[in-house]
Every structure is written in structure tokens, then in C-alpha cells.
Image 1: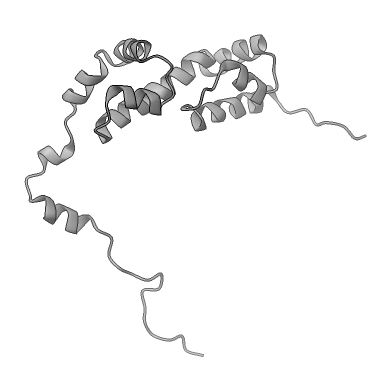
Image 2 (image 1 turned 180 degrees about the vertical axis):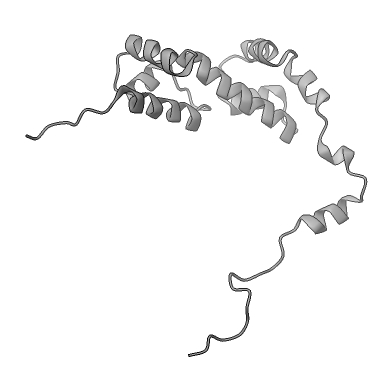
Length: 147
């Protein structure tokens, strides 16, 4: 008997969560996530929260804020540029959400975590030289294979 095989709801939910993880910077909505899970928005929201412990909207916001924190530490972008890069619609709500999650606004977070280069006690040129990959081939041996 042909037909569509039944896929457990959990697999649908994982598909939606993977979508949020991969496309957090896009204008992704809960409706988009529900569509990826092939569920109605209301049923999807209830099932997602039951499965993962937070609403789909909160999950997406958490991914964006985690990525923003990483960008604040790894780049010299402004807070607005970081917000745009992670897909927030409003910089003021981004700052408020960031403060709620990390206990301080984005600028203070960046100031509290200075770049590691400030802690290096060897010249930067030496650190860079040791960080470069060695020129190697895939084969370590240079001998021709014997027949």
C-alpha cells in the first residue's frame, strides 16, 4: 500500500530546530519553523516547548543572542552591525534582550571580555608565525611505493 510514511513529530521538531540554528540571521518566524515541521503554528508551538523546554520564539532569540555575544568578542563591529548580522529587527529590543540574558548591555559585555591578544606576552609576529600551518602534503613519506 503506497502513501506517505508517518514521521514522528519529534523528527519534525528537530527539522524546525535545525532550521532555526542554520538560518537564525534570516527574517525567520515561528510560522516558518512550523511550516518546516509540517504542523499548524499553535500545535507546533506547544509541541516545541514540550520537547525543548522553551518556545520557538525564545529558542530563536537565544540563538541570535549567543551568536551576537560571539561576534562582540571576535569582531570590532558596532552593536548595530552585530544586531543586523544576527537578524534582529530592533537594536533597542536587541540591547534589552541581551542585557536580560547576559546581565549587561552589549558594549559592557565586550568591555568585560577583552580580546585575547591583550593577554599575549610574546610579540604578535612570533605568535602569528607559530600559528601558521606547516606546509605539508597529505602523504608524509616521500618514498615511492614499492611494487
